[in-house]
Image 1 (spheres, rainbow, N blue to C red):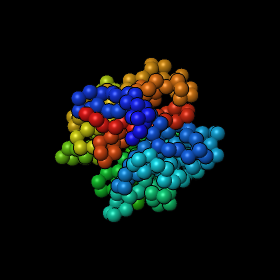
Image 2 (cartoon, rainbow, N blue to C red):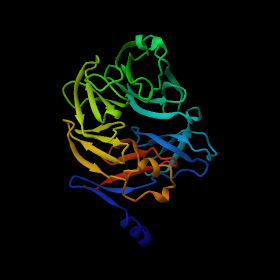
Image 3 (cartoon, helix red, strand yellow):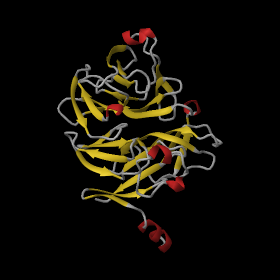
Image 4 (cartoon, rainbow, N blue to C red):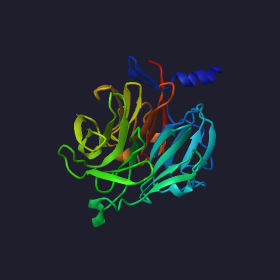
Length: 320
């Protein structure tokens, strides 16, 4: 490392405390000049350490590819997925047997798609016509999904009618639960959804975003409990006993195995809805604007992607 590089690195913000201390690397990844991020919505890591970024493509981009892949050092590997350029949203990765698959939510085409790591389509789930509530042709806009240990797929209708629709691993409809409301078992914008396997039994964990809470369910859709006090939780990712939660209201939180907050990171401006429309020069180093997706990598670092018009990928390098 040269002296100038070391000087630059030393100026990077440090956030958190104790064992949850991180160096902040904003605008991580060597994005090719022909690709311009729109809103960066989803992020995950595969078993090779590659980082996948799901984004709505900026109008000035020469490429329409909505999926961008980097190696663990931030070098560009490939891009694909022009068909998701207007609706790129939820992103989930899962190893099934010896093969890894991506699960994508497209809010523009209102579908969920299972693909290979290079974008080959394996399964598509469309409008849940078999579900009784949807027989009235109510709105349906899937935002994210979770997969149970047995392969069942749970789709959160976050921007439609606030139900969760469950399918088996072949895409056959099983049941629907949730629906608009604030009572136990009801949801208001189930934006993110995760299969929490930290305990003795898997628990379906939902970012009940407009209710400002996490809500948990059994795998057959029965309400278990709440975790309150979150600022517009968007989604989840788990590593060991810790869960990272990107919160749209300008921060990222880390929760323990009982869903109690152990760290708040990078609290940004209250007027994040205005700031998110600005150029990145308006973003304060060490602060988030509108975190939308986050994941741990294999080393315990955290990647955060944000709902900002020019896109932003931040790596939180674990130092505590």
